[in-house]
Length: 555
Image (cartoon, rainbow, N blue to C red):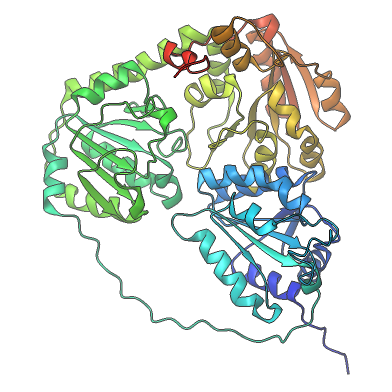
């Protein structure tokens, strides 16, 4: 008789992941998670994608979740390993990405006793609590199944976010009963979503409506419903940065990610209705909360705590954006909505004006954006790291055509773009993935270049090299008239890329960029295009005098 394999805590963890539909896990193997890796190998259905640092592994899992809508999963080591991932977990918390972080912990008998167990930190739970939606420590090995289900459900429940589970090392290989835990639920009756008649009337009677979309459209898969609403109402459509791609950005009524601009501000002042859908109204996109939103504000959000958070809401509709919009569209289909042709032309003029203004300000880099729009396939995933070229023009002038195809660092931490791009390519191998990065931020996680090659995840890196932290050079000059700690000694980026299996070329003009990008897209290989920003010219940027003054001594 063949002896049945013992069932362990690690096996139970993997069993619950498979039950939750997990097919890919990002991480780094360690003596403090080896039993879990062994259990994954034994089970056989989960892809184990290897990063070169825990920070990058979290970013990869984050991007995987954002581009697929699935739960992201990352597996790290104890203490220092968990701490290395903490910075990237703050990004995941900021973006509201459902992510499960599985990490080891010290031997349970040693936790909190200052015995300096290998990889131990003073208080791992407290550290993880500070960067996650919540954090759990396994205390009873036999309760691993409900423990894992609770954590997975917590990550996926609104408001979504990262959850850490710490599994003590002495528990992971412990043999436990292979119990069947079956959740029985009373199936809820399908409830009909109703939208009050006064809200429908407010929508119909609006002469100058505006729709502001965030990532709620993307999370709910409501792009089709959004387009139906837009075609019926003919409103101006502005997106948050997280909402890029919720509506194709070449749509004539889509102003895009240009909320904090003078032209759109004028539209807001004259608007008689704002419909916001899954929008957080972050300070960077609302001129620090000073944009004049109309009093007649209908806010649609699945999170009941979203209403009146940053801006007042006249009518709050709690619910999934797709379901709510379906109900509104069904009601509007039976009603006559008179659109104003002059307002439509005003919207189109605003759309063009914001782009023209930005193009004029940033030349010659507006030409780079034009080339990207010309060459990049419509299904391209664009990732912008925290670099001037990413957040001044990449996130505005490069059109995104599909939901989930734009990733940026919501929390503002530099250097996370490269592992994000790798994770996105692993998640969506059929789509081209292009990263806009700066030389300063790129070196933070440069080792993840080899992860792209090892995991057969070819990406295109557009590296804008100006030899330093460009935005900080500007702020220091503006505030103090001098610079410090902002100039960098860089490697030969092209040579470094080639040593890691990338194709690489340096360009010094837009025309060179045009031909090199075409070649990179055709190659289907990992490629780096090093843009010599010093030869091409500085990217012009100017902030408000009030913000510059904030760096100087003041009361």
